[in-house]
Length: 166
Image (tube, rainbow, N blue to C red; front, side, top):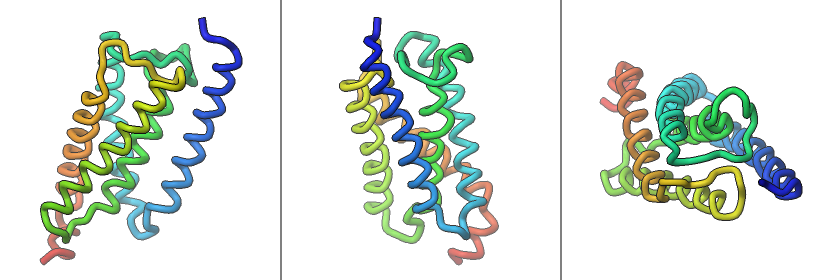
């Protein structure tokens, strides 16, 4: 059973994460790329909804403290807002005209930052608990979903990329 003081603290942390994430969206999505950000956000929502439910239903991860407890066992905050928001920022700020080393570093940095933050939350809060999961699975899945979102993003906006990067 979770102590009420830790549950209260965890809800405060979760609300703070929502505010910080919303602030990051406003700060790091350029006004001329809002449409592109929305596409990346929605794409990531679809992917995380599918994989998030699968991981939770298979008992690999638990979210003891979450909003909408009766809807399903996954975390609305992480699967439907936080990860998609970070993916929108990732795609709209992608270093398209840089060399491969910078692009690979961009993937590693973004996936690594999310993995580290999730690991800290798993260790010190009840927002996420690894059951049969390891931090490196988070890193791998975030990296792969970022890569797939980038492929979709490039495909969807292919005409704009042709014009911009002739």
